[in-house]
Image (cartoon, rainbow, N blue to C red; front, side, top):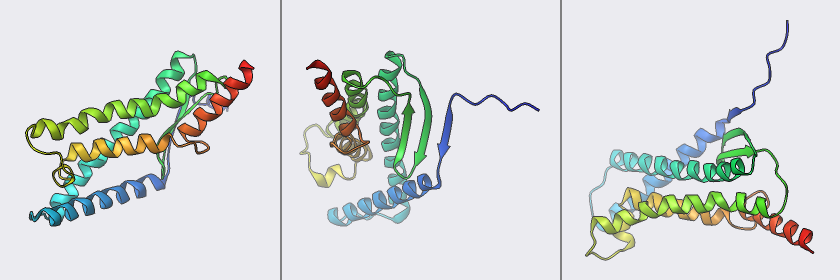
Amino acid sequence: MSNPPEADFEVVVRPGFAVMLACLVLVYTGLYLFAGQLSGEGTTFPMALNWAAGVVVLVLLGILMHELGHVGVAAAAGQRWTRVILDRSGLGVVIQPGPPGWSSVLRSLAGPVVQMVVALPMLATLYLDNPAGPLTLRNGVHSLWWVAGASNIVIALANLLPVRSWDGGEALAGVREGLRRSS
């Protein structure tokens, strides 16, 4: 009996992913309930839970687009993605290693840039909803789209921190390699 050929692509789902999603829903539920208390509006737990689930779906959409930004740049450079990982960190992709240097900088920065571009229309919905009204945290926190957009911006910016294995750290390593090769 022969072994089946190995798959070129795999999806890994770890239990921590469900735990992370549940925690996010609970955090956003608490945010909605707190905002309701601040504004003096009557909010219920089911309303808050529904709102929070919507925010989490939009945040996951932003993260998915982030990862597809990496994949798009890698594919343009002739690299393949070999794995999708869903774990306590969220969603990630594994791409075949490419040449270190400037191309890895572009690949690393593509994800956060795409996520920020996706977040901008989400943020704009608050202004489109009430163009004459002031943009305040109090009215913004009730906007599902605005909270999801702000969350995606925060995630993208945090990913740009120069921490090893985060996009900022990978970009910094690529810059160092690019400068080393140039000199």
